[in-house]
Image (cartoon, rainbow, N blue to C red; front, side, top):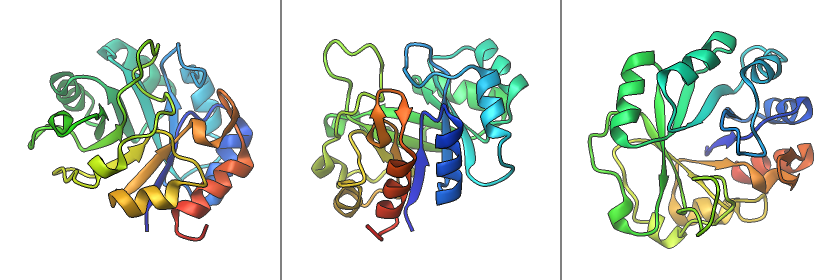
Length: 208
């Protein structure tokens, strides 16, 4: 069964929909330029709505230790998802003792990671378009044909431009172990739709 991560959770309705529909991971974005940004206190309040359930993932962009420490004082995270070079990702993994997923922007095979990186997984998407203000989460569909040849030595999630309508085809083409969606389950930037969250998880699990 494919793993599903709903990223950019920033409302009670979105959290409840992801939890009730059986998402494997819920992502909180700690990057202020994102329309999905939440403060550590907001994330903690949302996470406290239900015990257990999906693992909590914190998304950071080139963070320093102090930023992650501030978040972890407010909320227990299960995984750190980092837009960062491999060396920084490895250092933060060692510092905090938490699993680390590194975000990858991929446009060609030379963008594939080298074997043996000191991370626990990857979130793989297209490279940001010219002029983008964010390194990821730009709703750009990855090259599924390229990623059909992606065979890293770590687990990975496919991201970028996924929707309830295309997620089953994306999984079939790439053979990704799982998927990560944010804007594809929104009715406006940063505004999650509980109905789309439920539809996405349903489709990703092969029932759509």
